[in-house]
Amino acid sequence: MDVLTLSRIQFGATIAFHYLYPPLSIGLGLLLVLMEGAWLKTGNTIYHQMARFWTKVFALTFAIGVATGIVMEFEFGTNWATYSRFVGDVFGSALAAEGIFAFFLESGFLAVLLFGWDKVGRKTHFFSTCMVALGAHFSAVWIIVANSWMQTPAGYHIVGEGMKARAEVTDFWQVVFNPSMLERLFHTVCGAWSAGAFLVVSVSAWYLLKGKHTEFARKSLKFGLIVALVASFLQAASGHISAQGVAKNQPAKLAAFEGLYNTTSNAPLVLAGYVDEKNEKVVGLTAPGLLSFLAHNDFHTPVTGLNEFKPEDRPPVQASFLFFHGMVGIGFALIGIAALGFLYFKKGTLHERRWLLWLMVFSVLGPQLANQLGWFAAEVGRQPWIVYGVMRTPAGLSAVVKANAVLTSLIMFTLIYFLLFAVFIYLLNEKIQHGPDDADLIPSGKLALPAKK
Image 1 (tube, helix red, strand yellow):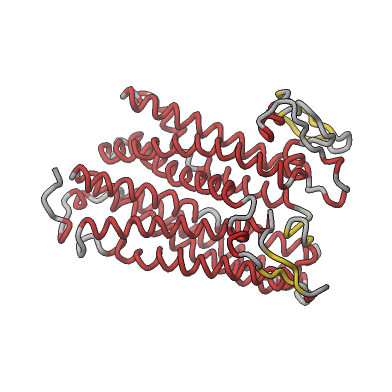
Image 2: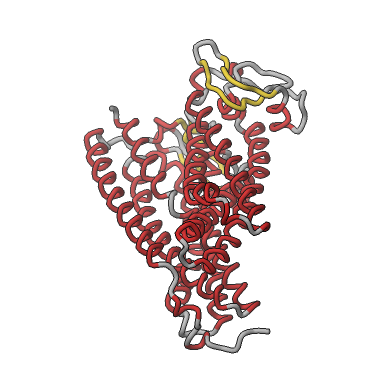
């Protein structure tokens, strides 16, 4: 394979692996705030036990996320030096803001969250939990700012020509609030909440199936199902908003998502199927008019087709189509699981439906797959541009990096990441098998205050 293909595989693989962990940290951060807040409000020590147990899981995901994220910083300078030079002014601002407003905030209060349970007061510890969760969300904000600028660049002008050309910021706030930033941030954060919630749901359902830590499991499951249900519905709503933004700002991407070659009014939405690229049509089940409604809130407004663009300006159609529809299908399945689980939980009959509990155990994979497929769809659908409409992907490649060097590092990173994943699964399983500590039902130190009435 050539250096371009290998570099794209390497960057895609490292980001895909890294992206397993930040959504869990963001989602668990929200749940920790809710659990510890419930303890402060009610004085019920089961909530204290829940908060302490899930804090340990949060710490594990945070540590692996930091370790896997460092590699990408180096890849910008090694594999994609031309691109880094071009966007350095823009990316430097966003990544510096992440370091100052997100990472320092999150890591600064992390020690209090992890080790301050018996050393600081309840309100002080709760404040640190809120700050860590807020820092995790801020981190998502600035990463989405940088990535969304690649999708819909704004607030810049180009200085220089040829290989020395670079994008220079003219309006920082236009860079931050570029046309796709808010809708993509909303969609991404909802996916992160879903990832954290379904992890809690999965572990809690497993405890119920095994008859272990049942009171802890029921309380945790309640929190997990509520957040999972809300996040899943918000994910669908934000997806609708995001699709309208794609239709406006990246019409070729939306056309590839739906395999739509000809500009069509009352455009159909594909429910299931595949793209016959040779004959430029979709084979499968469609719903007339729904794509027009999804894109424009109107059944008759035309949706731009791929034939409006030159062949060299079109994204890979089949891959974009499959990634997008895989994400949507999993998203609706998660809504169904969360809704059924919450319904039977409210009725008090969830324990009688072991099939649903087993489904909940494996549901932890759903948000992760959906998040990965959504990212694949967004990035593949942007092709052939590394900065949409401004810089093509091959133009961003480093001039001096050779294919054999990329292949060697790709093999090494794959082995290291495999080991990291094995360590993560081993440690997570250890924490789950051990379960919550009974000692955490009796807060000690400065936390051992009279329960709030």
